[in-house]
Image (cartoon, rainbow, N blue to C red; front, side):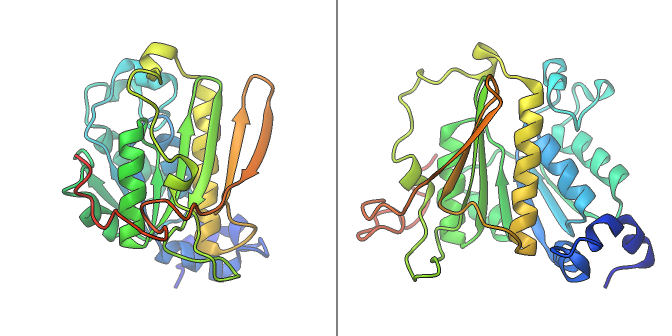
Amino acid sequence: MLTSEELERYARHIVLREVGGPGQAALKASRVLVIGAGGLGAPALMYLAAAGIGTLGVVDDDTVSLSNLQRQIIHATPDVGRPKVDSAGDRILALNPHVTLRTHAVRLNAKNALDLIGGYDVVVDGSDNFATRYLVSDACYLAKKTLVAGALGVFDASLTTIRAHGADANGNMNPTYRCLFPEAPPPGTTPTCEEAGVLGALAGVLGSMMALEAIREIVGFGESLVGRLVMIDARAMRFETLRYARDPSNPLNGDTPTITDLSGHK
């Protein structure tokens, strides 16, 4: 049930035919975990909190630095030196006190991933490295959770939704992250944002789209990004979408799966 205050707070959602009261109630009942309170996680967390997600979790073991503030808008100058989950938590609850906040000031790893992810319905991955992305995607498959995965480059970004534990309307298994990216790039070939730079506003665009995709998955309107990859070129302000399918040789839900746990991750 939505309280009278919540009805007013979410009025612009409720008048939307695609959301309405039932959709807003679904958002209130949902549990979303955001991996990282950084460039992508910051806007995603704010829009998910504003949207009325009932339980919002955030995983991050880092502290706020001055160089973060160019794009990580959930933190402010007085937060420099504070744990990111603490400063993000303050901002979330100031924005929407109806949200139940869970902060996890830990680094996601093979030992804790399934326990953390298991308590949520949707996972929004805003991590900045391939090792974590593969870990999160494998854990979401094993835990049967929906994953919204975004990746940010210097002037480019991409977004997809992965529901590899499910099937499409024809009964075909959905693709995994490993169907899209079978192997990570060799170490040293992908520069970090410290080395190559990052456009702050582009992080805001992609993080907001990740929140939107999580909301669409929960409420159930529009065409899902399962099996589709949205690519953004910020230099040309161009958006393109490509489709990808399950690879029968992928090690998760392929014909002969070889990944049955997270023991292959650190």
